[in-house]
Image (cartoon, rainbow, N blue to C red):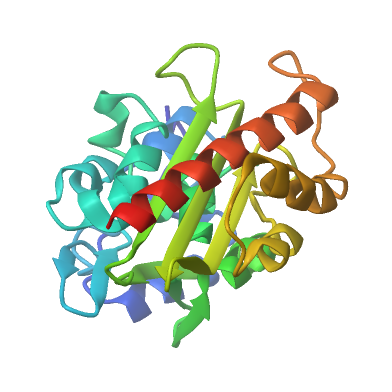
Length: 283
């Protein structure tokens, strides 16, 4: 419940929305409201409703897919283009963010702003060629991995996410997403995403990321470098993963110890890499 909210704004432009929030320390953007209402922040006095600011919509083109920040998560899953992009990795990951009811309410932008260490959507987007756009109020574009690295700083400066742009992968490529949770449909304890593009029978581009095994979802750059141009086997993948996993610092909790999270990061990354590799070779 938002018991102390006194002011409600419904701006029609991004500039107006940002101006209200940045001028008031007790104001927040309101889109789907799933997180804000659940938190019930007692100091929140002003909400800025983004429904009329023109930040929704999902469009596919030959070059890629544009997803507005207030687009509902379930819309991404159901869309015939975004839902099948890179082997459906985006839709698969989005399905693990919340229950169906909350996915009909929750938005892309809100999910990315409050994402935790094991967030499946952030993890999947790290292996896609994506850019994030945000306003402060001028609009800026940043590679998605840079947004993840500096998200806390951007949140503190109260920027507004406006849209996500995902470049369309080449034909001979595929993505895969693997997850372990307390139940098959529960939020992940650990998750892994992989993307492989094939040229002349070899992986020309490899990306792999894990969630739940570090303070933020993390790309395994050393693993990618070691595997690029190599025929992928279990032995080669495990050796390449070891170089990256040793640097991860997961936080253990009641759902999984540090040791469990590291082991699952290895198992799930291997599965995702092998699945993406096989699908890309058959594409």
